[in-house]
Length: 137
Image 1 (tube, helix red, strand yellow):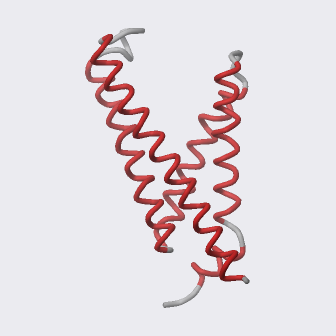
Image 2 (cartoon, helix red, strand yellow):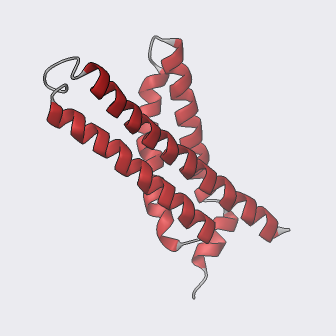
């Protein structure tokens, strides 16, 4: 019974990391398409080729890293907790201000991002997960 619960928690953690990673990669690809279609739009400080390239690279690399973290959760690799928690903290940093936005789409996105991040943090520190990672090999 405990093993089954532990397995479900690891699957949930892997799913959270995979969803976040695929979403970030998808958004990075969307930015590539938008930049190709419309070029640099917006304030000059953030809408120049170098800034757009860096932004796209960040989304693609961070997303790919989260997909690797997802694989790590499935394999129960010890190294996954740190990067995963950092990603959830980034999620909260993005989600909380979006919750306070005036638009309903932004608010919905902020609530979803924040809830997923909080769920990820809570699941990371559950007893079954801590038990797996506290074992000595």
